[in-house]
Length: 538
Image 1 (cartoon, rainbow, N blue to C red):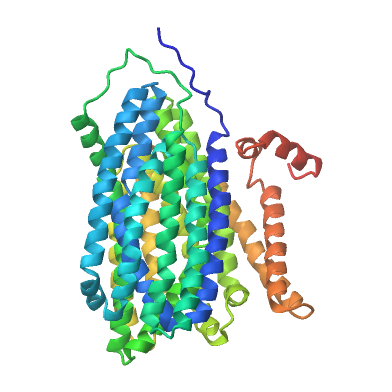
Image 2: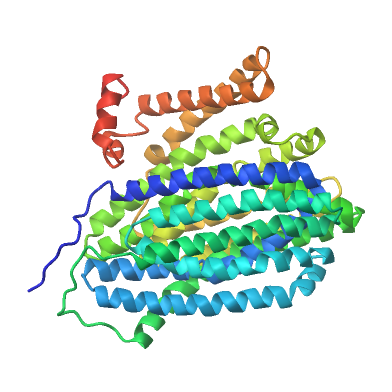
């Protein structure tokens, strides 16, 4: 007799996972800022240029190694868990772990052995020391990814969150200490950057050890249905690969494009007359100031993508298509509500926001217009993240590859052309990035409509948040002009952001941009709804 003790499906389970990852990602970004900001102030734009080149190379290897398998693993485990097939879950995990061990070790070896070649190819030969320092991180993160995929399949985001915080804390504490030591010893900038990046490696090892301990003590809350067959290793491996490879390709395309972007920036700037050191400094300014700030808002959206995949997979495995479509539309709506005001607000307050974190006035002046051009990309980054996850969860894993390839092609053409024009220069990079994400998002929305049957309501999902966001941006400008006359700059900026955010939320409720159903989907949704009803916002 089949005994099912699996927890009942709750409508706020998705939001609970999102909340955990969102809070942890916010903390990780704060820790990251506490690391990168003083590091930038210590070693300057040129030193961060070396750091950035090595980090982009690592990110490409990281995406190539880990982008697809954890998602595929989570999807397979979620499906087997829906059927109470615990034996198959264990088998899937063991296969994935062995695969990750091989991939991680191979990737680490390639990075170390090819470090000088990568440096030469990027026209930044001294970067090889940074590449060697960060290479072991790939192995540790690969092992961690197997366990993160396992827990994601159970919709348990807590172990992933804690492990990522440990990684970030190790990077912060050890990275800064190592940097100060290297500076005190009078080492050259490339070696100082290598010391700085070594903190990430040790932090990744700490995160991996934590996950190993949690996995060791993990116990299933459901009872195996002994009547269910368990697929053999070959069949499971083939399924894992079929799911993982398209996801890996689509994810690695963008990281490879970012890597080529750095390659183009360094080479094209030198082609139009800049020295290698100056080109390195401009690249460091763009990647560590503008791009760093660009990456803050999406941390509120990525958890939605992580959580939506197993939720949709589980719903489809249970033949509950309505639940899958509802969850998909909710994810798109929440992502839009978060991304649109962030994009507009960051664009209009680029310089004041940069001044919150960085003390080099000349560097901030250079980065501010770059960030203003980049900031609208936040919306498209959020949309492509969620739509990629929805397409992949519905089995259309190759569609994001098509959209990513088209977006990458557009980015490379635009960036290559514009950066080589002296009057445009480095501004070609953010313009190319914007075009890239615009293309991907448009194609993904088309694929969702045609193949999944999901057509997001323009007014309900996009237009209403846009109206509120425009008011938010105008309020941010006005509040910043007012506050800067009476209080110090950083406090004025924070006050402006707070005022703009409050106005955005109020207007969003007034124009029905958020419904009662949206509130009820959240953790403690009933209590939140009662509070909103008391203050007449619902």
